[in-house]
Image 1 (tube, rainbow, N blue to C red):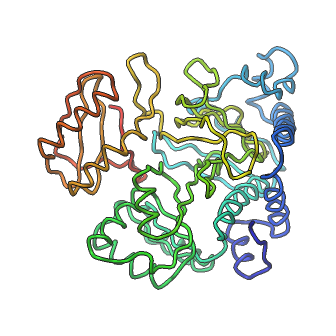
Image 2 (image 1 turned 60 degrees about the vertical axis):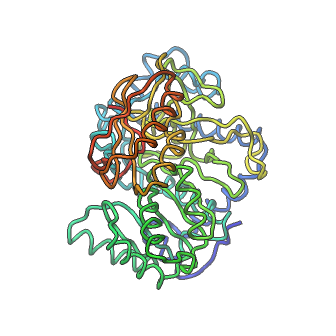
Image 3 (image 1 turned 30 degrees about the vertical axis):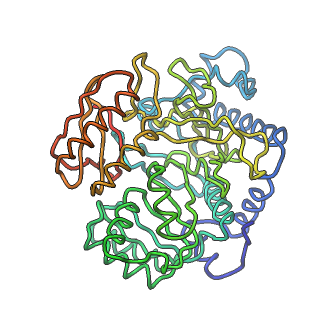
Length: 450
């Protein structure tokens, strides 16, 4: 349970993110209560929010007013769970092409503008109103509360950033007032890892927010330098921005001696799901409706990878209805044992960007990123810091390694065998002699599709 304080740190946090302290407290109380509501109550509340969102969109947003003329029946009838599957999806390109026609006209108050990282191409610019900001921060605060922490406390941040001098200075000043210490780097080197260790060990922040690939590099360099990261006093590691692989999950838990909170989110909608201490990746139904569909638009069963489709239920500045965010994910076939959101599905795994996803011989999405954890673990044992598997075609996979040195013949043969089992046929593993490739925003995907 998250305590809701009157502290200066809490008020500074609210000022930093343009939150009304009283409204934020009220939203956080709502989130604390709703996590233990039964299935029917959660579904009814989500259906009410969906009905309100659809009604608002058709009355106020030009894009949806135009769409209404092409749909049979009353638009609000689509708030029914079964009927909503017939609603047209909104693709990333359609969002980019729609431009301001997806914006609600003034007087929506307290609007902030956000831009995605551009990992999969041209960045997407979205608008969020004050109510949305309150729900997004409440979702994270609730999740951190599961681990006895709060976002307004001291926080160390290890994130991928390329900032100019002015923006870096402004960011540093804002972090000081918010009680954070940020280390922004594109790809952590050994020298930078030593600097991070000195800074963060003095800070003793209860929360370490880290991008998984940078977290792995930090742990790697600290291990080889004989540095004990448990002396930092970290209570929980908050992983976001990239897919948390099982290998990084395990090594972070061991290195810091604390649990890892996996946060799944996107710029367009915000916090989508958080992992509880019992291991369930719970969605946030209070502000988002998350679906996973196949290429034909049908809901996939548990255990089958599909496309993530999102509906923002609170945003009145730029409501997004059935937006294909560009990620692949898998529903779990087992409920979580923690008692939260009883009857609601939890996410088994997030498989990264659709553009990087591997497909089998029949064209279906596969959970290759989860499978890559075993392949990477073998390479880590041989002394490789990072590895990346690039699928060229059905029978060829390129291997990128750091350091850029070819693996042993034994390991190469082992990889060929594992990949052949995964892809269902002979595979030629080709060492490219180059380092793993990060996106323009500094994100690293273990698997790529050429």
